[in-house]
Image (cartoon, rainbow, N blue to C red; front, side, top):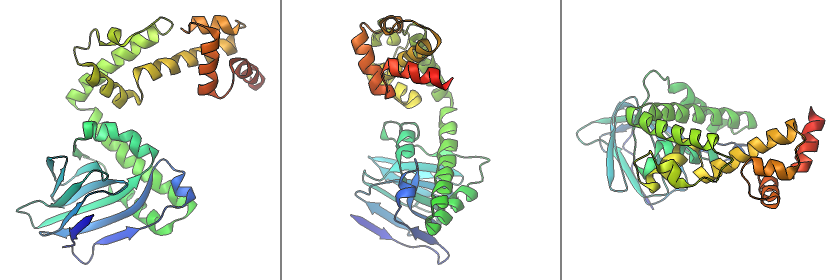
Length: 287
């Protein structure tokens, strides 16, 4: 359900497109975009929409509400929110304008950015000092009109530029730096002891935070769980041994922390797409 009051100046722009195969193949794509010169009574509320929305305020301010949270989005500040959860936004009370870019975006790249830009589903405005947002937003809007294979790549790169700038800003603040150091310490422990039997309690020993919070932080910074990171690291080390040594597969399995050759071969094949022996042969031919 959507309700709105389009109290905007006539120079405002609203563009829509239906992404084709080339666009949907990109990690980021856009379905709608615009530049709104909202006046005092501009407002939108919706119960659901199958996309994310990216805002950037040029002048004035917007008031955004979602999940019983409320934030004011002032000039030079961006915000990503998931429209699948009911939300509302309007020109901030007491102001006569909210001039802002916006784009409905989606794709695997956006979903991967969500834990950083919307941690725990919170609304997190991100200042973007020094970034000329006009260029990427214009690329998005132009791509929405062009609908060509080339424009889909340009649009994806523009969305990535904006979200990457937001993510760098988020991860550089003081509390994020402390959390990042905690996760880096855990990652180093995994890399140093990957061939041993590891458990989550070892990673939590020096963290002094709850297990659930640690797992959320790990996924936020590493993009996966500690267990999956360990598996990937073990498989990477196994690749090295398969290519650089003549060790039997069973020995390789034990050296990288797998209890038996059968489990190792099953995991390796599932993650690499080849059996260990086939990988060894193909890698050697490529040398």
